[in-house]
Image 1 (spheres, protein in one colour):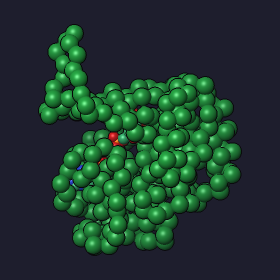
Image 2 (tube, helix red, strand yellow; image 1 turned 180 degrees about the vertical axis):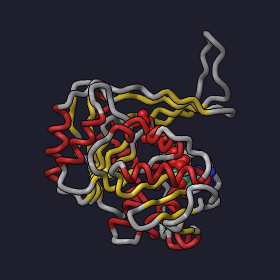
Image 3 (tube, protein in one colour; image 1 turned 90 degrees about the vertical axis):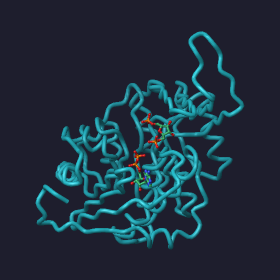
Image 4 (spheres, protein in one colour; image 1 turned 30 degrees about the horizontal axis):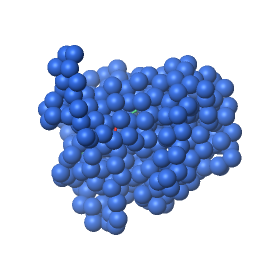
Length: 311
Ligand SMILES: Nc1ncnc2c1ncn2[C@@H]1O[C@H](COP(=O)(O)OP(=O)(O)O)[C@@H](O)[C@H]1O
Ligand SMILES: O=P(O)(O)OC[C@H]1O[C@](O)(COP(=O)(O)O)[C@@H](O)[C@@H]1O
């Protein structure tokens, strides 16, 4: 079972308007959505649709926290959150014909005693893998994630910002940076594919056993102790890329959980992400039988003796 930890969940409020209002005027809209969000929670939602057992945990509070819990329960996503006094945040996205405007709240102040509660919850569920995803709320530092990794009795994967990846100190089974996070985590320029391989190797040496770098429309790279694989993205009718990285991680973890090889896991992650970019926001599309899409993902293997230029 894969247990996800979202230390800073959110209610995602998405509004669509024709255009942004002029200063001191009001825009009105009929199109507004509220969804439970935060990267670990999104991973659990995709895992359920992939028929992989999961429990979503994390820290929630007040009425927006209740909304997160209740929505997950209505959607059949098992959860077990630690309750705090502060209020779960509301993240706002405004979509216009021209652009997307996003304001993420920093979140409630959380003290480290919440981590004690989370560790008890992890212990109760006895997962095979723990995934920590998303930003840290005020009051928590990266060492809170290190504590979860050290004190949980199973491998830990992380999907966190580059600034956090850079500071983590424990050993991790897997991390999934995108291109910007890879650059921020390593302090390197990450433009060419060779830059990606170099930065990934740097992260691997820092204690991340498998690194999966998602590269948007350029696909993804997986580096393990044994091999380095690049998968091309599948052609998709892209609506938006919200949730793309979370769904790729869910696809990879779901395949590894079934005993798939790294190669199959990477193909699955890319195939799942190509479905998710074709639906709005973090909507969960029906994945159905993914065999055909998985077979269409083309992979190349990088020789371990390859130079760090070219490619
Ligand atoms: N424009 C696109 N066309 C097809 N697939 C895409 C596109 N953008 C993203 N993807 C798929 O989603 C995966 C994750 O996207 P990415 O943007 O790197 O993640 P994140 O959401 O973490 O920034 C990519 O590896 C790719 O497989
Ligand atoms: O924890 P962060 O970095 O503030 O991000 C939280 C936001 O990211 C999401 O998890 C979506 O993730 P992506 O935009 O990376 O696909 C939202 O559900 C949530 O509002």
